[in-house]
Amino acid sequence: MNLTLKQKLTYGLGAVGKDMVYALSANYVMFYYQDTLHLSATFVGLILMIARVFDALNDPFMGILVAKTKTRWGRFRPWLFSGTVLNAVVLYALFAAPAGGGETTLMVYFSIVYILWGVTYTMMDIPYWSMIPAVTSEPRDRENLSVIGRTCAGVGAAIISMFTMMAVGMLGGGNDVIGFRNVALGVAVIFVITELICCLFMKERDTTQMKTTGVKEMFRALFGNDQALVVVATIVLINMALYLTSNFVIYFFKYDFGGDGWRGSYTLFSSVGGAFQILGMMLLYPLLRKNRMPNEKIFAVAIAMAVCGYVALLVLCLTGFTHNLPVLAAVGAVVFAANGVLSVLTTVFLSGSVDYGEMKTGRRDESVIFSMQTFVVKAASGVAVFLTGIGLDLIGLVGNTDDEAVAAVQSASTLTGLRLLMTVLPMLGLLIAIIFFKKRFRLTDAYSQEIHDKLHGKQA
Image (cartoon, rainbow, N blue to C red; front, side, top):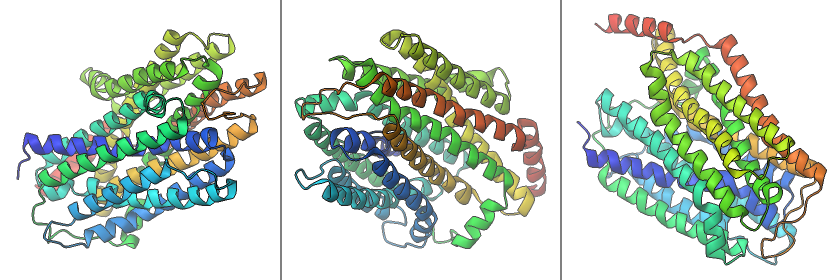
């Protein structure tokens, strides 16, 4: 069954809406509860980490539950739509915290609602990615659909990075509490519409013969594949660096860059970064491959690009150039373009680890390996927000002092600490990633081709 252009477009549209929701939560929950509602940053970070890790561990069980589902509408679409509606409601509740209930009430409310958000997001995220084999049996269509989904997911995340703070200001009339609530409502509505369209056009073929895998088998397949584990660990480190940057940079623009127009400056910086991240995926990586550069070398080049960008950003911060927006945006473009290339490479390396696992064990566990991508992204973002919360409390950052979102004045030591956290922590994560990768990764392009040829020979 070949996919039509309409199906490919609607699947991509589903990824845009889905990752708009995820990006809003991943990038702004800490800022909303710590800076706007004044909860302890360490407490917020701890709850975020606990919820994300719990949610990540819950992914395999959700995958099995979905696989065992049988309805007249298929296995995946009922979960995709019901999970979307529930998650949209909880997303609105997450950014519509009740006022006047006291700190303890707010802490309990946040803890419960955020955990519910993670559970309901898993309900729709797992079937979204898992239904690719159910809508087409053609390998080329499956690969194209995966690329479309990942690219459109990046677009959805970029939209949130670009426009959220400006939208908060406009829709809240200067009151961030109202602004975030209205933005969350708008994103929730877009989310439901995009996933409804996806469900209507992504018709599932007969999947009654699809084999379901138990939890024990899933983890055995993963831990028996040393190269998959290397790639998974690398993804954790890279994504942790990315989420640390996205969590700290909004504080940098509000309290360090400052000024009445800090929202516009932050939006411009994020827009440039989001655009270059997409260009890194769609143009820079294909260009490097066109020149026949091996993937393992491209990985090293991308890490070097990102680290150099962070070093340049740190130098700008420490030499008094923090208010030069064009220069900051240019440096940010380098970092985000490198992250775009790295996001593509980690998916490519995961694909190679599937062949490697088949050669070692005789089993081809695509669903197990690729389900780990969702797992590690959630785990990485959980650790990142926890480190962000601890860091903000350690440097003594003081949030807003009134309802009109006027930036509080920070001490010189707090601003210096913020600059170091924003640059040094991500750099450390990337350096550990490249050192670990160099020592443990063996799936070079040449070796991957050798494995592919051996498997193809066996099948022939």
